[in-house]
Length: 279
Ligand SMILES: NC(=O)c1ccc[n+]([C@@H]2O[C@H](COP(=O)([O-])OP(=O)(O)OC[C@H]3O[C@@H](n4cnc5c(N)ncnc54)[C@H](OP(=O)(O)O)[C@@H]3O)[C@@H](O)[C@H]2O)c1
Image: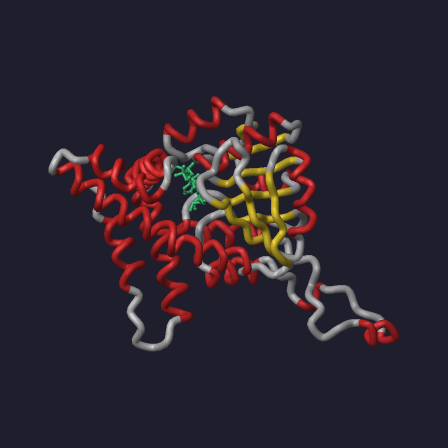
């Protein structure tokens, strides 16, 4: 099996290294990307190739892990090139964006094989085209070698359970793209909101020289591992603030769509602005 990565940042390099340690060949393209990405790829076991065309045509599974703002455009380009295999989107995008991507990979009806009349009795109305190559994916928590849990939904997601034999921890949620991104977005309303609040409490305590005292008093009620976990959250939020703004924009798009008219989603907007304020 060959797995191709579009984007070779923290997510792709971590997953690629796990897969190649377990005997799967991985490929990526870094032409035109930053020095950081080029170095990451050179230090990994991934095979660096020259064109996205070759990556898409030569991979059994294509993984898109780049940025929420680029995800849809990349899916548009790949869907035009791909006629076989599985396309997984791992970006933190809204369920709406996920469904738009999934539709790009639906084969037009006229290319479906004709169903013999005598069998049509057995075909349920809700039967779906089993050939949609798009799989909605989500990494739960921060990607790591531990390995992180990855959720999948989509018609071909069952085929990906095999990756559990190659060092990953895969959970299949359903055959409907959008189910995983809905779960992931709901989760991030909570987790990213907490990160933004932690950043502000940390900044205030730093201003008055009471960082240690803040974590000590919080640990009394929040548990022994709280300090370590929160500091990791805070570090990650400063480091990836630009990406977090994009993720919160996707979450806000979801909230606006499902909320009753006039409802203001104060907390999520404030968390977005907090990440956007990082210099
Ligand atoms: N990190 C996590 O733990 C985590 C967890 C859950 C979900 N995610 C999601 O996974 C995605 C990737 O996250 P990450 O942490 O790996 O990000 P990252 O470390 O910032 O890496 C992003 C990679 O994508 C490349 N890239 C950006 N735009 C591209 C484009 N148009 N075409 C090809 N490559 C492109 C970047 O190249 P340059 O260096 O040239 O910019 C870089 O190699 C994000 O959408 C994020 O929301 C991340």
